[in-house]
Image (tube, rainbow over all chains, first blue to last red; front, side, top):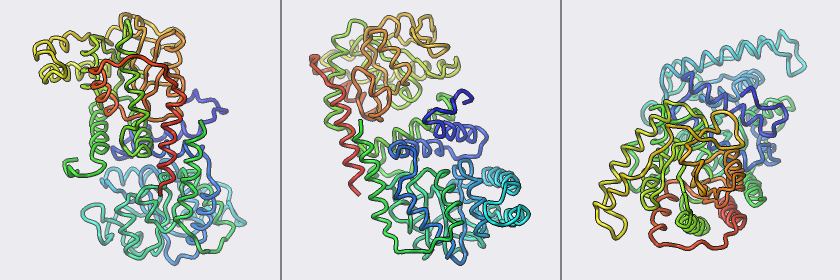
Length: 261
Length: 261
């Protein structure tokens, strides 16, 4: 993809596509991960490939809920690691919360590769300039202190069967609030049924995940997590939030786009 | 995917997805083919996964143009072969026209695998009951007589560079009318510039292909080609056709769907 000019209007989307293709070739992703990404591309196309005002409000509310949570955790799958792994690490460092690799189609090989990828990204993020008022050494310490979970699978998500139910006991099982981009509908419902706050990123505002979650950020995952990382620094307070109205606003943007020919 | 019940409302879509995943594993598809399929899934979701009235009109007009053409050809890529190869063969038999395997990302291995797949499908279609008034023997003869092109690449699509320009001299190069499902925008434009009628199937009504083609069927490729195969038997006549109005109608269906939460 070296031939995409810097000025190409869809450059970010094309680069993200190539990262997914490369990651699939490297064995990091489930078979259907590329198809899921393509679905996302289509919805993002209808969003104009930019973050809508309603998504910005949802991001701010998610930031507030994460800051107010007692035991937040960030659950990541393959696509999230590939597209937004560093942003997830920055968020975990700001919150001092764990990241858990948790896969719908769980295999030890993919878990291992994704954990390795996250460790490499963590080393890079640790050497970045601090995003807050602290020193670089403080930032590096907070990044290095993040627990990266997922190998152990000693916990369970009640209400699910088989390998989909596996999780980390000190991660998702113990959490009161789960930030889980690109989640499956069944698991979103199971987490909700356990009384957890489920904060999702999903480009399809009609998906079961989008409709059942506590808060749904309808946006592309790398844009959303970059903005979330920034929003955490502003210390927002939780508010009343109408997720149905939020989803309707996203649909309205897409519907207007679909009429714009 | 043996666990999808017959009654599942999205069964056809889930089975198609599995066929693409299997075909990718078998090396029939380019790296980005699964992503393209995912984009299509999202647009089809907005169509309600059924053929709209405006798509039915477009299919009828495509049938009429193909019947009126002097040298029609059907150009197929990997996704089309996997999802709708048999329907393409039935259409070619009805029209006594060639099918050409023509790939944007051309490799000899994929061409060879797709040609082999089409030959196998042709044998199956030849033994089907005839769709028209003829005898089974006549149908079998017309199916076996189809030229399946693509191995030779002795022709060129003027206006394109490199391997994307390669085609069959007696196929796409000689054709006055090309039925080309799931085509790339650049090649659609190049074929149009050569004065050919370009009849496409594309689920994204805003894509360059959809907007530049002579006629655009905004529908899922297997549904569209099954209906096209049936439409050919009714001997429709070419009419005035406003493709922009056709695309607006498709967008309107999607926009209404996007507002239906």
